[in-house]
Length: 341
Image (cartoon, rainbow, N blue to C red; front, side, top):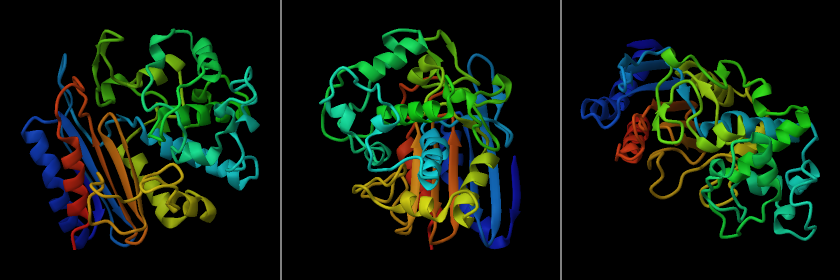
């Protein structure tokens, strides 16, 4: 199934870019997927293939299928919201996050956690651990929030850590005076859950004892009943609309767009990634390219120099994450063919 509002040049680009996804589905490495590209000069094109679900029953993938966007939540929702508050003068990127989370590690005024800044959280430049099974400590979301805020976290070298964006999500909740981030508007075309019968299924979850579809796959986000690091749902249309807003400047301020492209390390900007050696975004993108992935099998690459973007949406963790889906070489192949001269 496909949809296009594109000229011949974009159609040629799309056809070659779609081939790795088609091959992965045919080889049963992933159940199904959707490729979408948008070019400000040449239009947009999308195509769906394969299955949205194969266990316990099978459903086809369509262009209307919703996806658990996993860590794309970090850039589509949380980063965008935080940078808007920077524009509004509410948040100072170089101020510690205790500016708006004063109770964070409140029993130790000298704790290193109280010194981390908004900029460090956006760029994953904090000492938080990369992985933490927060959901195993309790099932009460209020207690888990208190646990995150008061725990003496083990410190290590800066790594990509969901804790950074969980804390940024807490800030958004506090400033909006809501109990959970799910009370906030997720943005046009997005949602915090979706119809299970119209959503790409994720994992046959050992924690929840069921195949997950229409509810967040990430266990920590599920336990917290909403978080800044995951939980957003969207379609290929909504993801491409978001990307178009970045490319044409209607979706973020000039300052926010600059920050999204400003490196904070050899691989990260404010919220996003930028090109680095062996990047999932391939080796042919321009210098002014940003992107991000999501654990469920989704990704978004935005190339400002070329004025175009590509999103690959798959259900590569269905029915299990414990399988080599080949998602990294798939993403690299798609992005390199997309950017092939």
